[in-house]
Image (cartoon, rainbow, N blue to C red; front, side, top):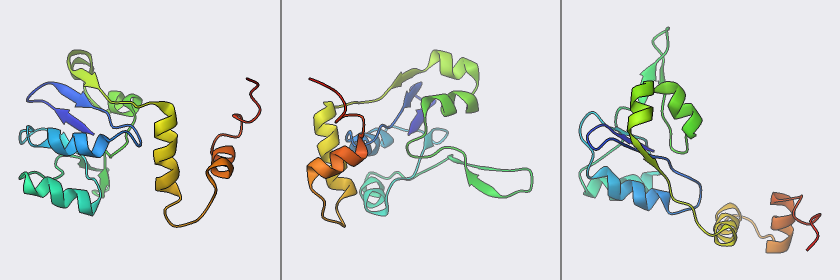
Length: 135
C-alpha cells in the first residue's frame, strides 16, 4: 500500500494481482513524507536496489508501543478511517484486479506451495458455495 502525498495518489494492494511488483515500481517515485508499507524480505531486497524501503507506516499507541498503522493489504475503508477526509476525497485511488479464474489459480499455487492438494478439492474448500451453484 502506498499513499503518495507528492503525487496525490493512494495505491490499494489487492491479493494475488501482481500488487507487489506494482508497489516496488511505484515506490521509486515516492517522497520522504509518503507512506510505503513493508513487503516480504525477498521483495524488499529488490525495492532496496531502487533506493527505497518501507517508511511512515508505523505509529504509537498511548502507552508508547509501536504498531503498524498501515500495512500491506489494508482495506480502503481502514485507510479512509486513518487519514484526513480532504486527503481521501482529493487523492486518486486505484488498485489492480485480474481475471477471477487466473486469480484463483495464482492463489491455489500460493496457498498449496507446501502441501499437495488437487485443484478441484482446494476450490471446493476455498469457495464452498461454488459447487452449489447451478449452470
